[in-house]
Length: 136
Image 1 (cartoon, rainbow, N blue to C red):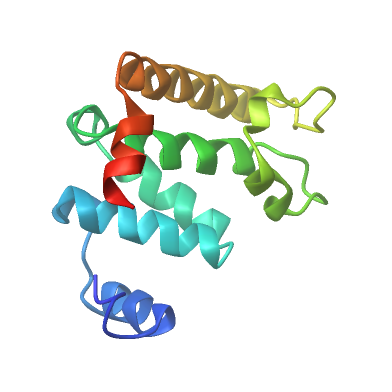
Image 2: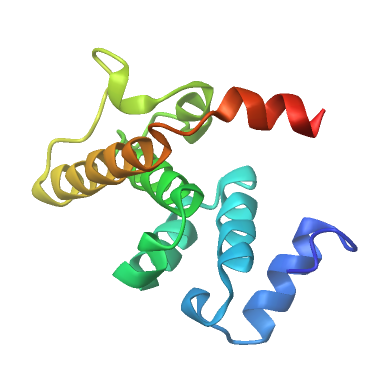
């Protein structure tokens, strides 16, 4: 998505000007787009993009599941809470985190929990420490 060669604002402008859907991108482009929207804290646009992903997209990679769940968790927070708070850790494990309690937010939160769990299950049994050591 042009993030490596150009700045993120240019990459996002290109995506919007190209009138593409996130589902038209390959998985690495989908992940790059979601990371870009998270970094720029464009939560409404991120939710729009996440809602365009189809189940097959989410089944393809744990990373995409994780970022999708993170976006869903941020969107169901209280309006006056900054989304950057959630980026400090796994939001569904934080006690007393001020989530909205309307039906739509509860539905988003349930989707997020399901995606966080399946991403964790996908990684279960993987020796991530050896991957980290081999990449250093």
